Length: 588
Image (cartoon, rainbow, N blue to C red):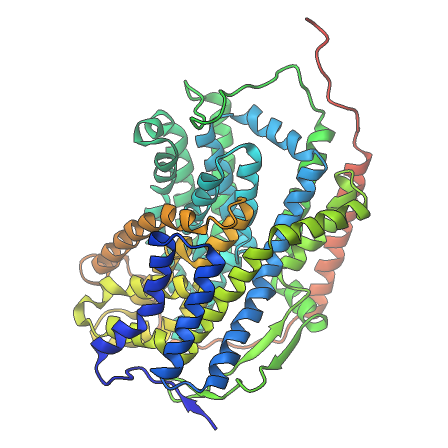
């Protein structure tokens, strides 16, 4: 028996939308007003969504329960798998004492919290988003900032907000690839259109971030650094997205902005070192010296991580890993049991890509890093156990959030909300980013939001005479500013920033910034649709079919062998590096 999704259960779209909004509004109320803990708000929201799905939308109880279980399992893998491994890697660095060296090195570059936020949260976070995505950037950068001494709330909040600029091109461009597959528009024009929208946000984001941390006046004090960071990132993001495609903008822009900012800091320093009011003034012990070998050893977990993450992002390596390390099955009782809005059964295939998952890449980096940072594997296992205990509530939160997301999607609640936005006629381009924002808020993923709404964006744009690439790209761009308030992202950031149980504070920290950026993108999209059409890329709408090539496993194995050789040489080099202790001055 197949159950068909209902979009307008009351035959009155206004009333249906009001009911569909209840579980989403509950999350805002629970986190902003009631200040509930994340896992409590998520579990109750899932219960409310399930009740509405069953009683209002007529979804069979069995399908509602299976949908929640499906979502919870996806929350555990790959999302929680990635978060656990990212925090585990960071905890290894702290437990071994190597993070003290990293803090010293960062202080030698700059002790200014404003500039550290730009280097780590904005630039390094963008690089990680381009290679790993799916929560890894926020998890790793928030943990690093807290380790450096940042106020945990600011560390986590800043990393969430900084993660907006790169999300559209995350995980080697997978959000745009999915938008292309669903809408039928080729990847390149979507990449170009997004690349003509987000750089406007990227160029302002460093100043915005520093203003949040220290205030506008203090942001002007470091305007050269803010300008270099934002301009270099935006220009590289624009150039790579418009001329190379969606795979590399985050990697190129992230690394490029790091290099540009570090070059600037060799010739310019802020007049005053800014720190949080609750922490002591910056001190840098010039008597302490670390050898190059010691510095490389301290950074080795992140050097290994970067190497493996880049390799894991290469399609030939993904193909090999999936060919030998992936289990997939039709979800029992749920696969093809729901008829979607387009009249086709919804396939529910659960994939466990246990080798190609980003979390596995981080686990491999952690296993290699354990002896490099001076720990035994027994000590590493103890750190892993402590990490699991640290993350028990975030794991529950993420599982509940994904259960909620799957219920509202499978029941048709999301389609109800989309229908009212699609009915806005000529104003639809203004609301197109809202649809992407809503999709990411619900699912926690720009990729998932594009899978949900790209076809709707395409069809609605055609019906009102607007080029579909504008609205499809708006779905991608609007989604990026929903990431910072997605309950899933909040749970990840809270776990990394030692804010477990304080998710409501983090949500309240980011929510107004999400709305501000969303409104900006809405006006940009409206202008692109009607006033500045010259920014729309020319493309052949008939060329939207892609030939399917068989995986080149030979190339994949070659890359894996090369990766193994490189890692072996890297490990040998680090292990043979001088291990002398820090040198201190003996002068009085």
